[in-house]
Structure formats: C-alpha cells, structure tokens
Image (cartoon, rainbow, N blue to C red):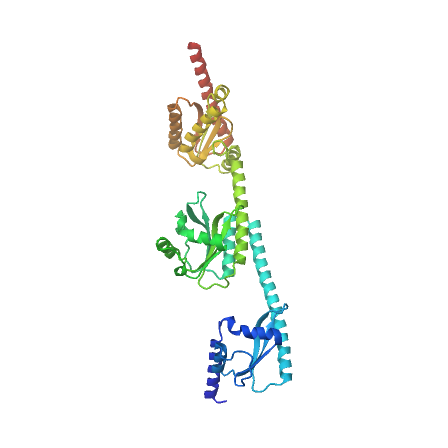
Length: 451
C-alpha cells in the first residue's frame, strides 16, 4: 500500500472511531432486543432483507463509514445482561465463520468479566491499604496534628490533589476555620486565609453535603447559585483558589456536619469519593477521641470551679523549676481568709463565689502562672520575671482584694535570682503567708474583744 492510500485508511479509521463515541444506547436498543432472541444480528444494508429499520440514524451513519455488511455478537455478563458487542464487517460469511465469532465473543466476555473482578479487587485492596495506613498513622502517632497533615498528604496523593485540608465549623456554627492542611510542593498554603470566616460562605456546599454526601466541582463557574450568593462567594473563592475541588463532610456521632475535608486539584485521578469518605470517618472518630483526651487532660490539670491550673499542674511545674535552677522566680502563696466561716454561716455557694472572685483577680494579673492547690489556697509560680515587676503585681493583687469589702486573703511571697533550692524558697513563701494569716486572725480577735 502506498503512503497516500495508507493515509486515507488511517484517516478513515480515525473518523470512524470519533463518530461512534458517546452515542445514545437507544440507537442500538433494537439490536440488543434481537440479540437476546437470536444471539446475533446480521445486517446487509444493500440486501433489502433486514429485519431492522435500515433508515435509522445509526444505519445511515454506518453507510457513511462503509459498514454496509456486518455481523454483531453481544458481550454479556454472567446474568446474561448485554454490555456491548463485537462487530465484523464482511463481504461473505459462512456458518463456520459465525460459530468462530460467537466463540471469540464468549471468550472475550469471560476475559472482560474476570478483568473487571480483578480490577475491582485490586482497587479494594488499594483502598484497604490506604485506610489501614491512615488508621495506623493516627493510632500510633503521638503528635495528632502532625499525623493529620501526613494523612492529608496520603489522600491528596491518591486523588492527585495539589492541596488537601480540613475546615471545621465553630461550636456556635457561625464561622469556619481551616485547622489542618497539606500543600504540594510549588503550591501556596491558604490555611491562614480561612480563619473565622462567616459560615455563609460555604452554605451552598453544606446543602450539597446534606443531599449528596459530597460536593464535586470542576469550576466554581458551574455552580448554580443566586447572584447575591455568587457575589458573596466570588471574592473568597478567588483568594482561596477553590476553582476545582472535591469535598466530603465531617460529621458528629449524631450526624451533624461539623466541617469538611476537601482536595483542590489541577487534574484529578478519580472522582470516586470512597477513599475520601472512609478517611473522613476515620478522622472524625480520632478527632472525637482527641477531644475526649483533651477534656480528660484538662480535668487532670485544671480546677473545675475556677478553671485555674490545679495541684497536679503545680507539682509538674515544681519539677520543671527544680530542673532549671538558673531561672529568676517569683513565688507567692495566697490563702483566703474566713472561707470556712463563710461556708458554715452562709453556705458553700457563697464560699464558691468568694473563691471565684479571688481566683479571677489572680488570673487577671498572673495569668497561667496561678495554681489552686487546696480549697482556699493558691500558689503563684512566675519565672523569668524581674523582682520589681513581680512585687508590683503582688501589690496590685492586695489592692484589688482590699478594694472589695467582702474579700480577704493572706499573701506571702519571695523573689529569687536563681532557684537552685526551690523547695526552701517555696517553704519560705508559705511561712510568710502563714505569718500574715496569724496577724489577720489576731487583729480580728482584738477587734472582737474591743467591740
């Protein structure tokens, strides 16, 4: 065959292939029905002996392509459903040729079935491996936030994403925040741009989550939304580069949407959200677990009444100061005066009110350096503070307590250049507080005698 004729043949093959793409199945529905009864169809568009409509659009198309005479044998599933067909153009075909073609079709159908099973199993294995990898990552990692970022990288790589991230809805359901993110090399992080944004920005997505369980869009311009909402969305979407993305919701145990995981992409490998949904459930569970751990840790280190750090936190801080003897430290003991009497005469609610008021004064001045170590006793441990500043803060506490006639407390404090003997320093501060407390009760006793 010379090059000219060869080019003509190649062009014809290309045209044939293109013209037969994405045609509606209704065009060959009659053929399928005939195949169910006769296992084959033989068409000779020039013979006039056909039992199907040769004036149909498909027959006209086949005539243009030069497919005037052909035999078609269906490809079927184990249940007998037709999934396609093999067709051969012919000039002449005898009975043996038809038998061979049927045998070939049967073999190919079986091969396709096995191939689909193997492909499905392979995909299931791949999905299982990713899910197991994600579970192990979260289960054995000590750094929850870092493990979440590693997990986001795994998911983004599976889908071919450029950026994967978690957006959480605030407790009051008014704002959204990007809490975790993974970004492919060469792409810019957007995490800091999604901080306390109004939830209305993603209202359309949340509605899709409720209806579809996912939200996939290749371009924001394809979104069917009102003009007002588009105007609200267009600016942040442009900034955040959310042009093409796939997202699935995070949910609480009672099914309330608490956020979502999303992947931005340039070219996506798959729109099947099976993996993303599975990972989403895993993350939701581990987030709940992590939240519970945080609550337990807070209960372990924080006082329930005052929300100040408790004795456990104080003892941990005590060990830290023992191991860092070069620190400048200010230590103070604060003991509420008359708390027992108040509890006995006016009840524990009044006593709790006094505890909270004094703890608030202490926290407002010393912040996280305040510890409630007993019913009426607080300790202040402030390191890396100048003596003058520490004493000034103590005097401010005294002033605020005296300013309120319903409050009273004894304070003993000490400041040291180095804490090489922290136990002795703490003991000294405690003794100074005890001395002041004795003075308070002596004065109170003298006033009672005079009156």
